[in-house]
Length: 338
Length: 219
Image (cartoon, rainbow over the protein chains, first blue to last red):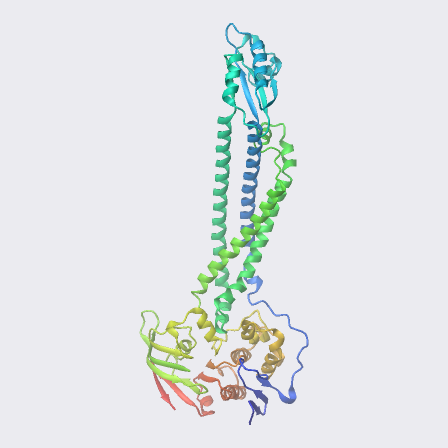
């Protein structure tokens, strides 16, 4: 018996109307109306978390993020130290007075120091005494050195007023007039070499970062393909009930974004801890030749707050790259599943 | 609603398993699709469900030439089609309730808006006590009923059922047929692929008979 869209059978009353219309329930049990639970059910995720073998992917992303963070941190340290050296060295001028037959090097040194002091833009001149010069040569020639027996030049360090461009030609003329054997070095060649070395370090760092990112994308693509293959029946059923590729991809993407973030936080966190403890670690090696070399190259070995911020941003970027690579592979794989 | 014109289908370089199919499925119609095993019933259902593309001919579904449809448009059209497959295709990690509610979930509806509807239908197909059971512990008949409930819950415009009563006892078979008939009376076009002559004899409907890749229609 049909009554305005309702059909009554021995089993109960069935209401039949389209989902896109305002309607009652599909099936009404009449007198046997069931008790509907008032609270919402906890629905299972469409793609179960356990179906995606995430621990391996988390480990890969963590390792990649760690390597990327160490690379970035080292590049930042080298760049910061190099910038510091450059600014220090650029604010100084070295004047060298060489001994010559028939000339008193002590008098020449004093005359040159006076000439340099008279140059505008020079705020301080510090001549190295005989003893200090001997000290400089000690690592190579040993202690107890007598400079009278060797033609060792005398060094003067002139500190330039910050931001002032010293007229080097005028200074050279002035210095040469005071002592013909004196020469002026503004460290330009050395600064250029430093700049080249820092540039090479940054380029190498960017190269390593690029390799790490490519390796991450490849690993994530393989993991995504594996997850899609394992969950193929789910994808097929979702297609049956009319789910589009975007809907399906988003169900998987959540898992991969979470895995990427987990890996990024672990790898980036460990790298930050390494840099955090690096000062203590460096102190264990201080006094050793290796420790001293590292200290000379990387300074205090500690990152600035902006460096930590860069590492945190990098971890998020790697998680985003994981999600992007996963999404790309998901859509490519979904095209093959009907 | 559905129109096939000279449709042929072959898998790879194999022989043509469906040949020169020309027929129409009007809206609100009810038909049985029958034929011997291997005649191509499931392949024809897959063509109707857009999970296969014909190797030749024209398939027009809901006014769309399916050869011109993109993936998103196919997904939209599938929301208007319900399908019951022989292997049920239930998701093992979801309860019976969640499996049946899946079409609503994919539509983005709130759980509270369809909860009563899903529970009522599950009770009606005799799965009221198995709502929270996972498919691996359901019997074959229970799985079949859950698959049917999932296919009809969103009241599709076209229902395709492949041997929907193959795993249930005659009484439940009659009850499920009754569900399909009532769904049809409410406007859904129904195609039931079956070998079961007893089932077909219970309802006087159009019969599409596939034999050696060709279709014969008995009105």
